[in-house]
Amino acid sequence: MIRLHNTLSGKSEEFKPLQANEVTLYTCGPTVYNYAHIGNFRTFVFEDLLRRFLELKGFKVKHVMNITDVDDKTITGAAKEKKTLQEYTAFYTQAFLEDMKTLNMLSPTLQPHATDSIPDMIALIDQLIKKSIAYQAEDKSIYYRVSKFERYGSLSKKKLDGNIAGARVAVDEYEKEEGADFVLWKAAKEGEPSWDSPWGKGRPGWHIECSAMCMRHLGETIDIHAGGEDLVFPHHENEIAQSEAATGKPFVNYWLHAKHLLVNNEKMSKSKGNFFTLRDLLAKGYDPMAIRYTLLSVHYRHSLNFTLESLKEAREIIEKLDNCFWACVSRLGRTSYPACDPTYWQNMICGPAFDEMTKWMGDDLNVSAVFAEFFEIVTEINKNLDKMDEQGLKACIEFFKTADRLFGFDIAFLESIPRDVVKKLKQYSDARKEKNFAGSDALRKEIEKLGWLVKDGRPGEPSTVKKIRRTWDIKK
Ligand SMILES: [Zn+2]
Image (tube, rainbow, N blue to C red; front, side):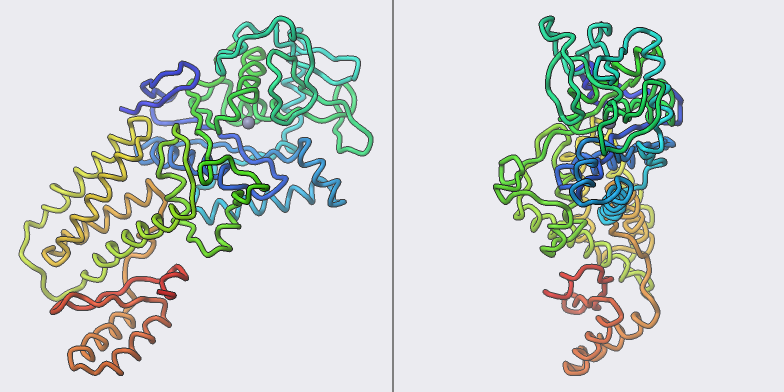
């Protein structure tokens, strides 16, 4: 069973998708006016974990993440740099896609651009006008009449304030005016990009973009909609109002929101010097998988205090996983193994551990319990490496591969050691046995040049290797 905390009900609920084996998932994507920062990535990586878990449970996940490439910020940014909106947003879209890859996030099934979906937005606004829920004001823009939608406030638990109902909010940034009618279509301003519509030239408001793209690609009612907690109001509240008023159907069955990220216990801000994009951290030499681990390590509904210190700890954790995996791989291909029940590791350790991990994941993604179980097994494997038979080692390697599918740490990205490396490693061990340390040092360097790091075994045990994929493997 899977339970998820639904912001709409404020409760943990059993997850029952509309289709038995399929999940429709919409996640609000980036506004491509700048590089995404680690606060953005906390939410994106949580959504990636959610999707990986659902897939591991056997669901086919149709995941749509939009790209907001027209809004106030993108228009202002493009104007500042004297670029077309398209040129400007294409650059940051590309950067975002690269960052996703760096953090080993799965590609969404679809990533529609807002500017490619304008006809869908116009059609949706048209429906709302026909139902007298939307209206054109003197400024020629189209607004949503909030007082016409009774359930307004059901997600954010905000009550409509009678006094300001009818007030209008024309900005499409993170406006907070409660109960104000919000803009669906902004009438064109001089010098700004605009599109033709039945109401004259203009461009969509931010909220209508998501409603239109979500319903176009996933249907009028979807299973899960996720985002950061800052999107609950007004963005998601408005998405519900727009979509449900148009279709008369529930828009989303489960709303999931990730809490914010703090850096050194403070809100990130450029003036405090605690503002980091992913690229800032990479430039400082931090490992992407350590960043990924740090972003995942705290339950998504708790605020995450990010520190550079926590990144160093995360790096050690990833390295420990890495070492354990390669210790297993290095021991395969031996001529003899210790006697051991061949089913023991799969049936008694790895299998049950994974069942336990998925059980905790199903408890609203309880990552603390999941990681505790995972690390316990890694310790167990490390303690018993030299007592394992071939089947045991293979079971542990499989365990890492499945864990990768869930966490995306990319530990088991390669499963065997090339023959020339194995050969040199044998020569290396022989040289050490003969106390020919000059010879063994030279061989160690040769192996490093091939992209592998030698790890000396305990006395009497052969040395092993692991694939180098991080610069810090060499620096040590
Ligand atoms: Zn959205």
